Length: 402
Image (cartoon, rainbow, N blue to C red):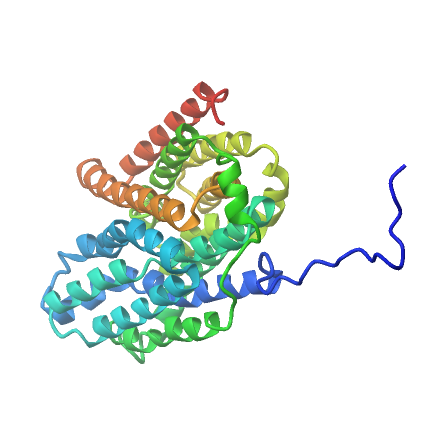
């Protein structure tokens, strides 16, 4: 029988931790909101490069395609460095740096009076920004498991909401302020986000160092590399269809206006916003099955675009693609949260961002080459092949995912 403590020998109470573990739901939402407002210019203004460049000397906007991916390329190159620095010098500090870096680059872009100066500003935007990787690293240092995967799902929702809303707002402001000069106004947004983030805590998890030193990472290095491959293929398969989608809709449905074509384009992202929370609960315990189904639905959705020649047919194709997009992104968030356990989050999320950006760049290049040579259907075929290859890879490696 164990001894019972008496009043004379009170059980000692642990000292309160000055750095409580994790983040509250409100703080996670604040972080996601900061990413949303900070990415407004980064996502909303590039579609208007064809209007911006003629004012800077490129009359026919020949450089629009290349400049569209310049920030992505330099964001990919800088992500591992910033992630490593975040692990060494603090995730909150590096997240604030990313927001301020975006603000500086937007000011430079809005003030540019030549094509060279504008290009330099886009390079700065990519290298000094990196808010998505910095934000994920911040969350990864404070959360783990289902809490982290849920937070990453919310982050993706923030990115999708910005991708839908930003081009509409920029277009609405264009009659009063040119898209070029809107960079100057929208530079306020990441600066405001930095001010809000300054009031959030530095992320800490008590005993994280002891736990990480005593136990190996939850996901083996080989499985982590496989996760990077899946991220690359998923980004490639979904993004490769974006550049020529509106052109395909307008070609197949003569007379359709830009608003309707834009709404068709946005449907997959709206699917994510409406259903990602429920999908997260469904795939939390079986993310690889969710990812497999996601790739299959992406392939099916892309195939459904081929014969589409009416608005209902395009809506059906976009909804199928949206279901695959949602399943894939949420499943990848769950797998990424698993991979982050026991690892330095800054470095891992920096590498993850590098792989993701490289997938987007490869998709842009493939879309340009295939679309120019064979028309707007060719990128859809390319994306279908990538999605099917990824689904096959999941089946072949299903027993070695840990």
